[in-house]
Structure formats: C-alpha cells, structure tokens
Image (cartoon, rainbow, N blue to C red; front, side, top):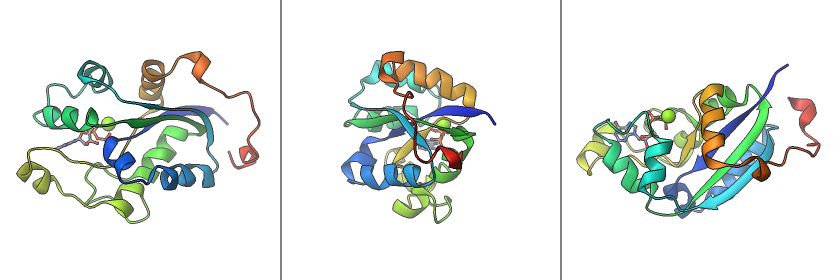
Length: 160
Ligand code: IDP
Ligand code: MG
C-alpha cells in the first residue's frame, strides 16, 4: 500500500475560532501520522505562490485578504491515500454544502451567496491539498526537508 503525504493548513479564521486542537485531534484519531507542523503569518506574495492557480479568479482578492489576516497552522500528515482522506474529512469548499461530520460542515455554514454579499470572503477554516501531486508541490513550498519528522513510528501506523 502506498503511503503518501498531504499538506493541511488551518486558516486564520480557524486559528481565531480556537479549534486548532479539535481539528488536529480528528486527523490523529483517524490514524494519520503528523510529520510536520508550524505556525506562520504569510504575506501577499506567499499567498500568490500557494494559490497560484486561483490568482485570476474574481474571488482571489478576498481570499488573499483572509489568508494574510492572521497566523495559520501548517501541517504535513502521512497515511494511505492521505490527500483523498483529508479532503473527505474537511468537506466541500462551500461550508453550507459540506456534509455534517466534516470539519467545514460541523464548524461553519457560510454560503457562496453570503460570501458574495459580504465582499467575497468565504472563510471555511481549513485548506488541504486536492491531490498527491498538489501535495508534493505545497509541502515543498511550505516546508524544508529539515522540518519534516517522519523517522518515528506512530502507534497508529497499523491503521494505514
Ligand atoms: P478548496 O479550498 O476546497 O480546495 P478552492 O476552489 O481551491 O477550494 O478555493 C480555495 C479557497 O478560495 C476556498 O477554500 C475558499 O476559501 C475560497 N473560495 C473558493 N471559491 C470561492 C468563491 O466562489 N467565493 C469566495 N471564496 C471562494
Ligand atoms: Mg483547492
């Protein structure tokens, strides 16, 4: 079975909501292995690198304002098909449509309409890589190899 890494970032709205611990607990409970974690306050240039495929979207200015508005918690999690698993756990992009039981579905409920009506920002607590290839790129942007600690045995590795 292929073990892969994925990149996860608790956005400023998630950090301000004080649910960082609750979110980390979910990933720990499902058996993912934490191999990297740091707090950062990114600037506009870094946001454009991270969201390079979205900079031309009409909602990008609101997204950038939101993502630079406070510190984020960046993490790397490891597990079997980790990228797909974490995407399932965070839920759909629009919190209103995200299923109950997902992070976005359980902790927030803003709609696309509401985001449009309030200046284009759609706080949805968390970012996660959408595929293993994207994860490689994002991990490389946010972490150096020295920041990755995978040399320990997680007691949950039998769940992978
Ligand atoms: P994702 O975070 O679920 O992967 P993306 O389409 O990659 O969704 O968009 C990145 C982020 O941009 C979203 O998480 C959300 O914060 C914001 N966003 C996406 N679509 C909209 C929109 O239509 N209005 C406002 N913000 C949006
Ligand atoms: Mg995305």
